Length: 438
Image (cartoon, rainbow, N blue to C red; front, top):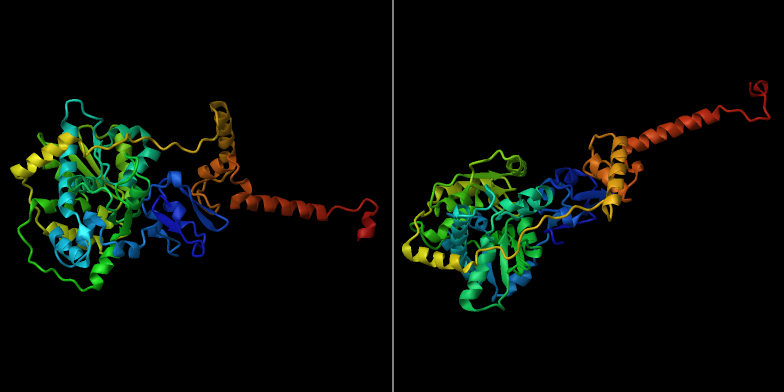
C-alpha cells in the first residue's frame, strides 16, 4: 500500500481501536475487517502503535533483495545511529555497514543535512519571505496532515526538500551514476510513504525502504563492537541531531544571519495543537517550526528497535561540532546557488471526498448529511466501524452505510418492533368474541 502499512485480514478482530487513534479519520472497520482510505492516510503509525492483534504492519521492502544487491547505495535516517550501545557516531556505523557489504553515503548525507539547514535559514531571511512561521517539511506525516486538515497552512511549508532525498541526488551527480539502485533505512511508515507517494516531487530518488529495526537486528546478530574510539566530534556528524526533537531547529540556527526564533514540537497532539495556533495567528514573531508526529522526534518512530529514551540520552551525551569551516561553507554556498535543495513541485492540498459532482448536488447532500447526523446519538463510540457519528453520516449520504449500522438506532428500532409485535399479539381475530378467548 502506498501509505506504508499493510493489513492482515486474518488477525483483525474488529476492535476499532485503530479507527479511534487515526488523526485524519482514514480508517473504517466494515464487516469485521479493516479498511484504509489511502487518500486520507498520513502514514503516522498511530494505528500500528495501538493495534494489539498485529493486524497492521509495515510495508517495507524484502530484506533479502536488499542484502543480496551489493551495488545498492544506502542512505539512513539519523535514528539508525542511536540504536546501539556505542555512541551515535555515524563514522562507527559507516565502518560496520561497509564491513557487511553495503555502500552507505554518509559523506553526501552530512552535506545534504547541512545544505537543508542553510537553505531553511536563508528562506526565512530572504527579502520576500514566505508565510511565517515556516514549517519544516522533514516529517512526511506533518506535510500530509497539513494537506488534509490544514490546507490554508501550505504557504507556511518550507520549500526545502528532504535531505534524505537530496543526499542521493548529490551522490548520483558527483559520481555520474544514475542507474545504481538505492535503499533507505527508515524509522516509520511515513518514510515508506515518502518513497511510494512523494510530495513535492514527481518521483522519489529512493528505490527501496527497509525498517531501522530490521537493519539494527542484522547488525546486532553479527555481534559487532566499535572498532575505533570516539573521535573529536566533527561537523559531518551533527546531522544525527535531526532524529531528536529540536535537532533540526538547532541546525538551522547554526546558519542564521540574524537571531531566529524557533520552536520544536513532537507527538500528534502537540503537532495538531501548534498547527491550530498557527492557523489562528497566535505565533507571531516565531520564525521556524520543527514538527514531528512521533514523540521525542524520529527516535520515537514505530519502526525503531531501541528505547527512544535511551536514544535521546545517547544523542545528548555525544558532542557535535557547531562550527563550519571555510571550505565546507564554500561548498554549501555553491550547492545553495545550484538549487539542488529545493522542492521540485508545489505542495497542494488533498481534496476531500466530495458529496456531489456539482455545487448544487453537494449542497443538497450537505443538507441531507445534517439531517442524518441529527438522528445519530453523537456518542462517537466507533461500534459502527466509523470513528465518529459525523463520519457515519457522511458515509450514509454517500450510500456506503445505513442508519441500521448504528447499534443504538438498531436497538431502538428493534425495541419499537418488539413493542409492535407485543401489541399485535393482543389483537383478536374478527370472528372471535371476548367470551371465547376467556
